[in-house]
Length: 167
Image (tube, rainbow, N blue to C red; front, side, top):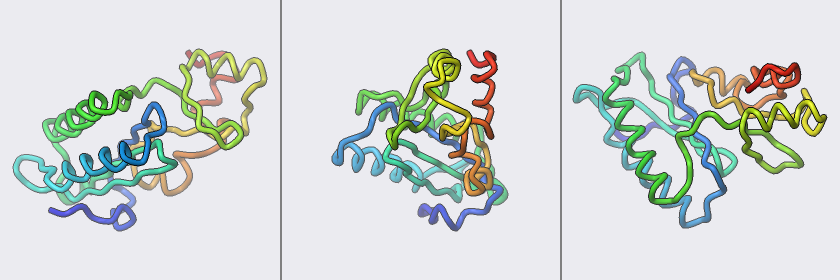
């Protein structure tokens, strides 16, 4: 099944967000997205094609969504997605699957730090409740579409960093 336009997927679609450790060069980006698209075009669960799509945002974030109301992804199909991304980590020498870092914007520059470092930045005042963060834990496309993925830290789980509870 060909990939469907990301915008055509229903709001209830299951979503995964992956942050790429560093900005990719033009050729790296093309190669990466070509590998992802090749996988998505043949992505199946128990032999049935999945209705899915992807988006590439800010040259650092891969969003993959699947319409699980039509055919839900299986554990094996999700494992296959993870395998292709692990292959890309090796190919590009970047981390993609590590979901522990905190991603945020400072002066229009995307930063990626550990949770401890973000907490330190919050307590020192280097970042504030209005600092834009990327919540890569959003699990439904509706959340991303409604601003739940990219929003001020004070409106996200990241706010815990300002009260010493993010580690």
